[in-house]
Image (cartoon, rainbow, N blue to C red; front, side):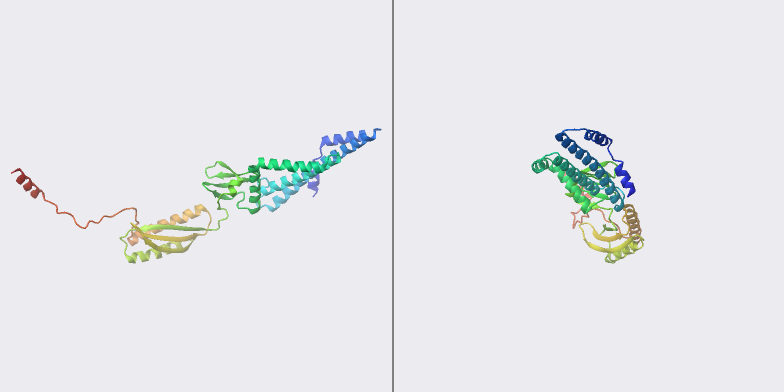
Length: 317
């Protein structure tokens, strides 16, 4: 608490202190009544500005401490909710300070607020796209479809979230470049968040040739199950002879990788693939590839070279 008090008081403006000193000196003079009223109004303006500066610093420090304490990644600047909260609190503070100063100097606040309302509508229409991004950032902050440090895929873009601002979100792609995307576009897109992935469900298929016997086909799913169960980071789900393709017998297998890491998944998949190749080689079954076999029911008789020569001689005779 004492740290906040010291930081708040360190925001005292030297310019406002100078103005306050001048007003103190002027107040000691024998001035007409109307000048005393003006000095009093200036006193209020100076005091309101200084109180506003103190309150502005206090709000910033308090919100920073709050969000750092309640944010696991300790990134106050990167939090859209923190930015919006700070921006909204400061806007409300200075709007109140300005209204109080205008009221003290004799401005009709009611008419002023009405004119601000009309002007606000015009400004809102002019910057509706920007406001759309601002409200989208608020939606991201509240709903949290992703956070800083999450690996996400948005359409054809993939990368790690580095910053969520009022208007844009910055993503570091796998290639190393930074991608800047409008918050409204982020909200309107389908987002795949891999940071929250607990385990991976893998579906893969393979095809064998029609030379396989029925007994071999029955053994294939059992063999695949044994291979997957032998992997420590994999959990077998199912393996089936799915159907008859145009050129092959089709099998489908599903298993779960217990680690969300993509590198771990690829290591497990590679180990399974190699074991399957070895096992199928021992079973004398072959993988199919796109090909066609043409069966011909009958062919015309082939004439020998002797018959061809005799026919040629008869024709010449």
